[in-house]
Length: 535
Image (cartoon, rainbow, N blue to C red):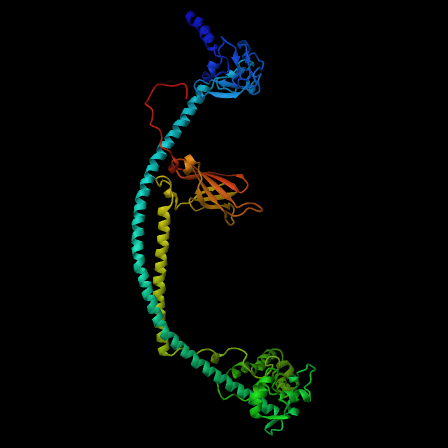
């Protein structure tokens, strides 16, 4: 026992041969048998001035074990854990910075040596990371094999689609020709049908216009002498042309084309067209003679004006007796022309003319033969459009397959499985969504529209590790700022999950995605050995 106690001071003496705060790698610079030269070469001092608590070297290398030089470094041996350099300013400052406590040798502070415990925890962490790397790399190899098989299948499908596309193109062209051939007789039949209908419509309108002109001529011909004179025309002040509210003799004669009177034929050919828009009939619509053609629009437009009176009288029946109602009806019939015409005139203002489309103005149904042409052409169109849609679907599938097959999914296609997936991360405010190789977005957690944080740009890792990061660009623009963009860092993990999202600078986001595809090949496991103190 005594021998052991005697040996301990000797061991300590051997240990202090290396100046305090100097690492083993720098020990040869500190030879006590000769003057010390500053590591930056700026000066040389006697060796007894090393660690004398006075800074002689500009780089502080003469005081590795004291706090004399603010720019010096103290080396923590930390046996059982990781060696560490700390600032010389932290030496003997009352805080245990080295896990072995060697930085507080003269501060009066007793530091517990925690290096072995830290080393144990560090080894556990490294072992867990090594296990994650091994398992992730195992999954990565499976992903690579899956992509190889999937790529072969997609290539096979692409070849089949490309072969089928030619057949579809031929079919579309054939059906296009059949459609065009079927549309020719359809167009001819429909054009003929429309032409006949328009001719009938024009004839019907011309007949109506002639009847209106004849009716107006008869109203104006007060003396029924077969001619409308200037004086007779002046009975209609609404035909005033200078806006003074009265039709002067000169204005009337001008309307008659400079003549003093006009016959029915000239009135219909020349005069009626000039006055029809202003002319107001003296006869109530209900008293007008019924046109000879029952299909004309005039009776249909004017017919509701007659029964409008009984409709009002039915409302009055609820308030008045039948005798009072009868009296009012008599008054209406007797005084309707002089008294009621100003009230009733605005709706039929002007001559009795067509004001809205009627059944006669609608094109009649197609005849049986024309409809057969239409049905045949429509069937040909349907077949053509169906084939054209099929061709477009095939072309889109070909484009998608070509893009996917040619996409850069990593050195061995290990990232291909991410192509059709999306991953989300929910924070206190937002739901972040990453769809690899497509887009990144954020959406308010409590609802709202998503904001684009960028679309796929390129691989963005350093030259030696290109596939360690992704870049998404040209997202939604920030207010008075650049477009949003996102860098996605890929980390090794057994599962695929978004672990974090931050905004290091305005409108520039950083996202971390764990994936087996990012796991490197682990080094071979070392053979089992005894306990080791250092990492």
